[in-house]
Image (cartoon, rainbow, N blue to C red; front, side):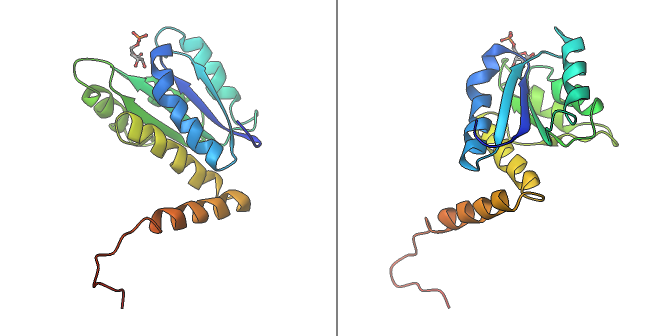
Length: 165
Ligand code: RP5
């Protein structure tokens, strides 16, 4: 958790932490400060309200919310702030995350939640997407994103006999 605190990650349950900590791992790669907390929208709605309402004043610029099952946490959080909210659907029930995916992605117009893939892939992409948003006003982060993209591109292995024109 290096760098200025810019990203707040919240999860609905302690059981969500192993997957959602990987959003933070990605933010670490970009040198972006982050925090993580457990605050269920149905078990502790008042705490989610306080957190969402204080987020901007505390310096946060992007929020990530991961939840499984009915997964109302990202939408509730989005209702409490004008900061961008990224929702990560998690597999926590026999429906394997399809339930939380539909819940999070289907926000009615006006209160968007940027929804990423279910589970670990989505958690990591939430970190990358948050970095891209921070990169809009932080040139160092923007430069690191370009470096990361170049590293990914360098993993390409061309077939023998094929060269780029
Ligand atoms: C959701 O219910 C949480 O986000 C979690 O993914 C799921 C199960 O929670 P626990 O029963 O593990 O606390 O609220």
